[in-house]
Image 1: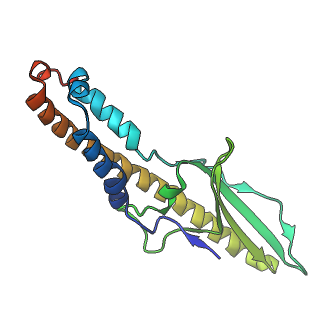
Image 2 (image 1 turned 90 degrees about the vertical axis):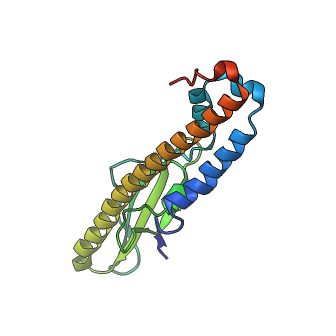
Image 3 (image 1 turned 135 degrees about the vertical axis):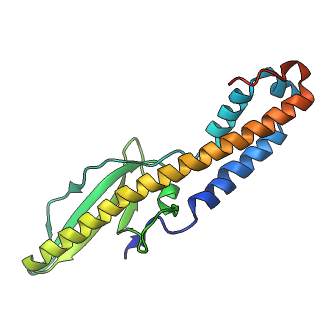
Length: 187
């Protein structure tokens, strides 16, 4: 059973829910003494660091296991790519995408210092199927590379938008509550 990647919640919905909304709550809960003690930049950087979902990093190499016998003339092909980052990011739908998202057979999350794996396995019954199967696998991994780039690009875009928005919120709050610090935004 294959799993479709990059097809659930949009990057924007995820970012709004997990970063923007939480960041806004954080801004309104900053104690006045802390608000005045740090620059706007320090506050924004701290909040973004706290809630940022990180990025997906993908090893561009496709790893290959030796074919395994699968009964009769059939054998099992196993290919995988390694990744780091939250598995949740593999489910986010970027603004740019194909009508059919890439698919894998298994997602093995990173653990104990080892990278995660995106695994595709296929049983090939005759040698003639081998070439088509290899093309299919190569295309899925090519699409995964593109999707990772698109998701990361979207994350960077929404992070910058959130940074600008937080900057204006904190700067406005500092002007009201910190008269001595009103001009030290910390560019």
